[in-house]
Image (cartoon, rainbow, N blue to C red; front, side):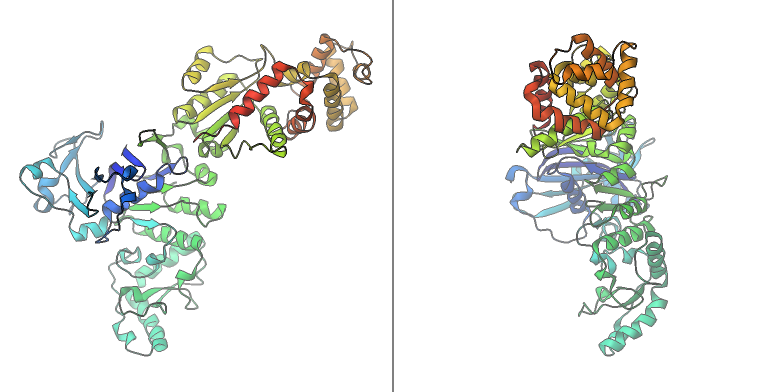
Length: 577
């Protein structure tokens, strides 16, 4: 069945212009709210709809400019024989060069035969559908798709309203399951209750193939319909037409009463069954109405794990579960520039690890790439203290944090570079004991990325110990003793000093502060606090250090340390989107 090779949108809602070459499989749009993701799905549906009329208003025009026509063009490839018929569409067939995306006016050797379907609306608000072809235009020819071809191409849409697809109505997925045609006229001649029972028996013969597909999909996806679904007369419908016949469970309860999530799961499964005849599916917010384990079922039912892809899916999502289940080549970040032009950006393969571990990073406008758990805990602790004192939280400002788990600093900048190229606002928070590649750091900076780090050669433990007052330092040591025990901390002090210093002596110097601790003694504490078995290496421990010890006593830190922390907090609390 046909797939969409290219989408061109002009002057439609928030989209001034968009050119996109989707894949044959799952194409899931992610990005900031109001970036136009749902409008892309609407554009596809409007162009291929079987509705004879659409409600178009001035608000559908970009910036309400009705002088600029709405134009949506879909380039359809992988055409079946009816769409490649020269008798029907000969003057409208074009050729596509798959290597560079160029469209030739005529099909030819080495070219894929395609049709260009256009939907347009001018200031009179009257929609118009037609096929585009310069050859046909020169001949004065104009036409659209045949009604039968339009019915075959019309996409199924999973949105907030889906019960249409659970009855044998025009354009529903049930009508595509088989060539069987239900006949309810005889049963409807009886009394309403008898008619329902009578038709239920007849339907087993008339709609057997379709019901078998429904039961198979329901079992595989865990949709609760009882032992088997039945086709019975829907008591909700009073008219005598195809829509009178709807799916029911084994007790005769209409399946339209299922919850939203179950309904979406079942329809997605049925669409999978008819993908060889109707291969385009539109899914608004994949996660809508579903628990995480059912989201995973739906993603699988969409064909995300199947090669080759059984159907072409256009979806939107704001769920980290969805992002974790999809691969990088199935996700597209939709970016909007200041002039209203939209750019769909493919996520590169090297981002797959970040996608699996930190999908939230791809759903936030700003991302802070942190060297490890200590950095994550440090900034979270300060954030929690700030929120307690009336400031906006980093999450509310749209910041996500990524824990790179240590390693060489270049690892941080590689991730930062990938995200910056996708239009994210990126910061790197790292130690300075291991230097990154100067060229790589400069490249991230050119892309707008910013670095937050300490003085030359310092890790986070050293930066803290060397820049806080003796009172804060004593509280840090005592907190380490609470976490690990006196002997553990004492052994670290002995090891870091080569056996010349003790925990008892250092605590005595700090408390009751009768003496001033030296820079060398601070350096010993810093070495003891850091390293392989660092005192505050977990997120929770460093959160407590920042929230309970340093932030409430911020007057007791050096001005340089204070400036670095404030710069990071201000950057994180600045909304970007």
